[in-house]
Image 1 (spheres, rainbow, N blue to C red):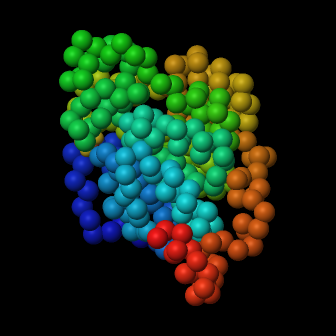
Image 2 (cartoon, rainbow, N blue to C red; image 1 turned 90 degrees about the vertical axis):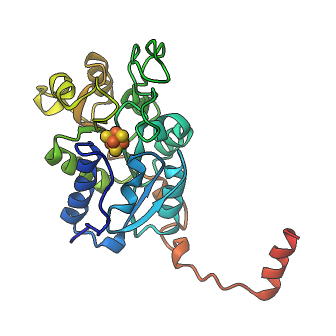
Length: 284
Ligand code: SF4
């Protein structure tokens, strides 16, 4: 299926977000989804525009709130495949409270973060993913805060699917998004997506030199949570591939009684006039 629409992205040439857009479109097609079976919900930032660039249902939400909206969409209609997306500032600063709780809730949503370690839309400020010493307009003498290691954080919070990829590895990214969508529960995919305009440190070349593919680590086992944590610590979080997956834990939807029988979008919303008036009177 064709998930391309006629809207031309206005990202800077070379921005890593182009690959993420292409990967979502390919993964959705490979899985055999129809455009009307996919909803992409995004937050605010350069990456937040992605929901308008994919031929599917889309919702460009407010800053840091892609996940609450995405979870509401999924709860109202279990038949939709729901992808939430945004940047590292969106998801790991203002939206961090939602990220943590969506992780531990294990709701069946795939969250794709375009991690460029800077705020791009507002023209280059330090983000929660910027390394200590990183110089920007907001930290001209270098950041004195350590970067958040989101993959370790996700494991600690009880994530059942944790993966990381790189915009240059389109094939690997497509495959991880397919696995994330097929995972029953919450899947977090952090994508190193370089901001070529404002981040002159974490460039494509820098990632190529510093990333390690988990596929290249002998006997790596993504079902082993302790090994996942140990490997992340040994590589300072700079690994790509499927880091951890727990296929046994039931999703939030599976634990909600009656949810599967009658999702909200399939319920009859007709209401007795007297009941409607009673409800309205509460707001008078
Ligand atoms: Fe991409 Fe950075 Fe340009 Fe934003 S400012 S579109 S993140 S390259």
